[in-house]
Length: 170
Image (cartoon, rainbow, N blue to C red):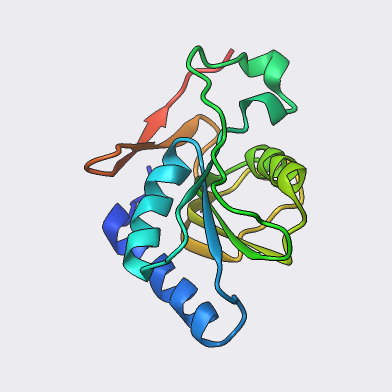
């Protein structure tokens, strides 16, 4: 089983990377958007650490998933909340785990339904092996190589903890 770095250490790492991008001018006055639910938890902490003035946006991409027929719909689907205009703005899209890339693809589809951002930077707490789509994060807290039956799960919102769990697949 892979060793994992504490969540708060990774949030500090992501925060430092985002601050560098802002100070270098790569990101100009960014808006932050977390993907429900773990990405929102991570984004809340990053948003506070960076002292961003605009409110935090939250995406629930359940209706945008291309594997909806395989995974079903969570019984408590809440709407997305983007309390700002994203047109022409720099967006920091935040998720907890980048695995297949399907969640990020769905999030991008939904974001573009709200407008056309100038730039989207992807920040993830953990990136793991197993990509099915050509999607890579710009900022990664930690990269993990997990076995076929291992899955990483973020638990929260307070405190944020992570576990690697074994699944049994037929």
